[in-house]
Length: 166
View 1 (cartoon, rainbow, N blue to C red):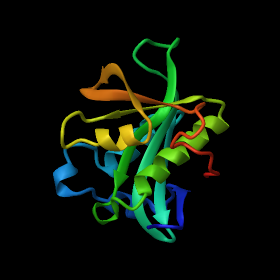
View 2 (cartoon, rainbow, N blue to C red):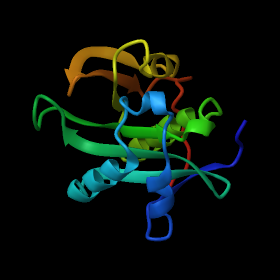
View 3 (cartoon, helix red, strand yellow):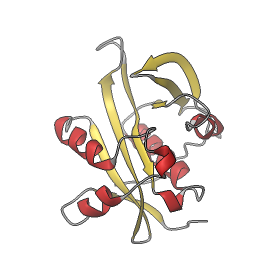
């Protein structure tokens, strides 16, 4: 079990480590590579929040969150959530994904939000069980061929507990 998980901003010093992170080969069709996420973060700099996940000083994952974007219905439906989650192939099952969700939840709460939205590839090979175990519930919506789920951050005992993140 990992014990020293933390988030770090993407900088010139760690960008190569972030880009080098790879999910398992059988998961590559489920999530875009980190390099695409970083390009999107550059293009959507006002809303994207890319972070390297470290266990001590060792890169183990990457997340990108989004804040207050029009989702589907336009300006009246602003949402915040987890845009991308890449956990390195050898690091899965050690709490990194849970830590990522909790960290994004804490940042959304810090910004005054009460719900965390994410999407996932539907199907047996997708991460749906992971998200459902954390308390996400499907909304019935689809976005870009992915199932939309939401985690209520106002519920006591949810997976998303407050943490301080950069």
